[in-house]
Image (cartoon, rainbow, N blue to C red; front, side, top):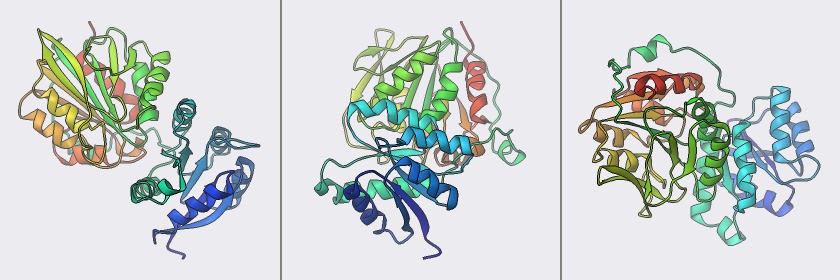
Length: 352
């Protein structure tokens, strides 16, 4: 018991608390240490005890999930929080706000007990929980260390006017994107493509939130949408995003297809399609996330086009999986903490 990861479950539904506890206890590495029926109880428990992860409902009486996250930040608590969200569209923006406040990830609440007991839901739940206990709750601002510098592939940056920026991120991505995208100027000399691992219904809200804060026009990708400078396009949740060239212009094509790397959209899919595009140069940005999505696609892209690869530094990642993979590949040109990524992008493509 002492070696197991201690989990706090916070939900106002006694039935949902029991369902979550049953799932967590299926995995020998976890144990449910405590349960709370509202946010006030949760904060009280967090001040007394240490947990490896917290499963937190959003809609609760007395103090809701957003209020809990604000209290966690105010009190300086170091918690690994996973939001437990309804799939309802009305919860999408609240979930994104939670991610920006420091939640590591979110899990859709099952629509039925049958779904809750199904292998697909259980596997996803435990995978996200496992990632959360390994994540970094409060990324610090740091400089690039010498060990990271040794793995950087030197390359002179020469903006050429026919470039595209392609960003890949997963766990911790919404918070990282909120740090990076608003810093990019409207006259950036390249369009921006983004694959953020998210289910359908959430990417539109993510695009809207970023658009409200950014000089760039940020939007959720639509089928046959023309790619233009001054814009950033977020792959739609549940769809792969392909880039095609027609009559000298580039367009976005949304595809169903099977999940790749366990996700859809998949960054590898985007990078592979860019290998066949008319862009002279691709600036690849790999940010926080579990797994290795992006590396295979960038490796393929590297064989066909000039690329410049920027990776988010380990210490500023919520989960150092995707950046670790691209750094290990030897293709990385620059490693930066998240607050410096936008500047690195601007320098790599220039402004018009």
